[in-house]
Image (cartoon, rainbow, N blue to C red; front, side):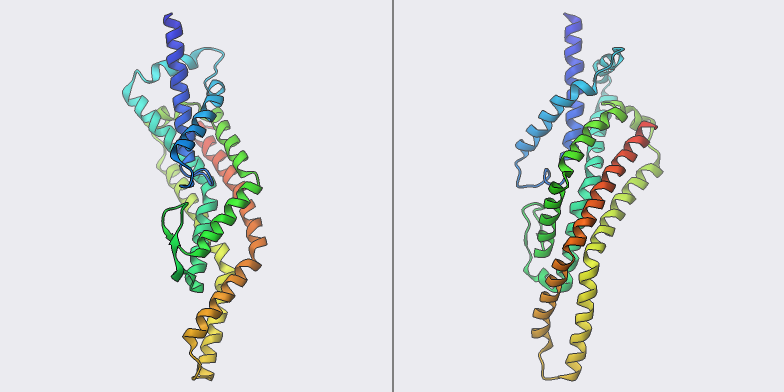
Length: 277
């Protein structure tokens, strides 16, 4: 009876740690992190995935894994650090895929600022913030590209496979012994740089077209002083910005595909670094 009770505690402890890692990823994953999806639905999806993955994640033929799970909560410090560490690790793994949405939002916001469409800011239901219509458009396009590339399936498979490199609960010992500051700084800088790089690459063609348009309007204002350049320029810049955006959509789709692939490779590099491989 005692062995059965110990096995039950170890099993539910392992499931809870798996659930926390998946929940951390759900906080930032494209599509899944949308505010339009109720939190209860997100929790139910994470719990269902954890129920499927936990038996494989905590399986250990030697039986040492079950004992470690049973002893994990006996040490409050290791248990608390393990729970927070699993949540943080899931967030980091999800952030490697969320770069797609963050970069698309940044690129759309830059285009909206240059084209004048930022004057018509509305509240985006996915972020809960006032954003330019072009930013909302780019995020919708990025989400559709993510689904078309089967990014949701690949990310979930990579997240489930992360328990092979970093078993549930081991992140607590890793954090207690200390993660090198250079590793944490490199991960943060890579996520930030990839987001800015993607946003600038999305906005660059439209920004160049709008710069040329602005120079042309300036020359016309000098040549034709009677023309109201502010009234004419607003409509012209908006039209040029939208035209440049739609002309570059095929290239942006290819860029999104490369970002999804790079994000999966980045998550694997993070896991290998934490697992010591």
